[in-house]
Length: 533
Image (cartoon, rainbow, N blue to C red; front, side, top):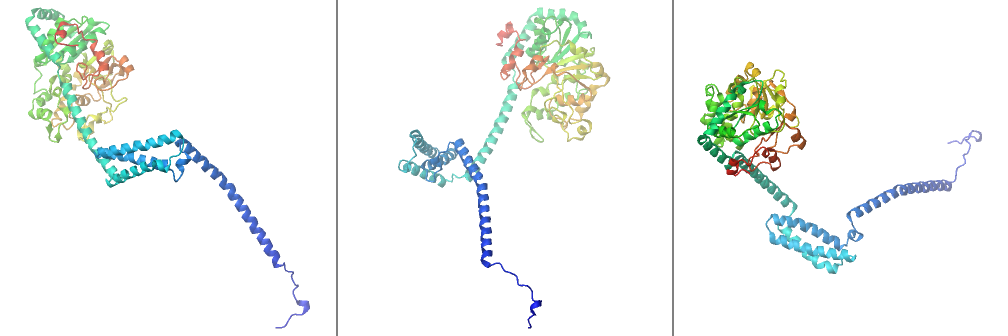
């Protein structure tokens, strides 16, 4: 190839020596390494400080010494053995291996003594002085492992124990409910005695009957709608007496108070005798027996026909039903007593009255109740205190909402209310044929598919849309089964011992008994003879 002429050749470039290039590259690398290493040191120092600080805090909180952190620490080995041995002691006891549990416990105490002595003298444990304890404990722990005292076995045993305890708890709960119900149904010997002595007194003491004849001169009061009329349906003489006495003592004008008492044939004579021989601040008292009501027959009263039915009685008392065993609370004699159902026939019982206050026999009155008779019920029939303000008592708790009749007619979240202190407008009752409404629902509940228990569910159906809520202070509930706020009790006009723990029973709640007992005259000769105290 021909060379270019000198004039046409490219100018020669001056090259940088290779040594200089290598020098520059080396300086750049060294500088980069230096910068990276400095940055790494800056970042790592706070982390080391933070970690060290965290360890110090842990050691301070757990009281850990440097000796315990040592991989060759004898004290740490002993502590670990003690912790594991304690768990095995529990498992051994659960397995009923008490001898092995005792051996473990003894060895735990020996190891703890060694640790305690070392802590007292403030010197680490030596291998020589702890060798025997560590070896003995290791043998026991190995033996525990051979007995399958591992975590999996422990979990299975604990599950079995929990299941057994749950079954035991359910059994105890059922027995408690059963015996509590039996105790609540019990009539104390003293009440039997009082009834028997009063019956004898009534038939041998002609003066009592004369007193009753004198009281008949005030029969006009029994029909006077300008007076304050109260009714109680009960077979408990003493409880009824407390209701009348507490109302009379707290009334501003007892002479205007009239009590209409309805009982049964057995308690009719003693009830008359008691209220004939005792004066209650001038309160007028009338005593009747429901067997005298000619209208009270199976053709008119559906529930009476049901109560006389052998299948119904078998349901309540045999303990069995079509869907299995009947709960104990269903088998209560009061549900077969007509006295419990008379509250739905108040207009028939008192045909001349326009307004009446219904009281249960397990209440105590501690305020004047005359204002109840001037409360405007706004066209409603029943004035009652609602029970769903702070509790769960709504309609769906009492009624069977799987039944189409219930579902179609009643709001499940409607507020429940309480029987025990109710103001009834009997004029509106008759006008709206409330008793007829009650009959309608009773006839459709022959098979007990709408509700199963008591008089409150049919009451909720009967007075649905016909109940006027009253101020909560008029009726305070729960003194027979739960703790009630002290301020509510102080403000309450009527205190209700609803529940099994009635104040005249031994199972009554002790702190609430004085509220009831202060209206009982324990100095009365008959009460003393019958050992009331």
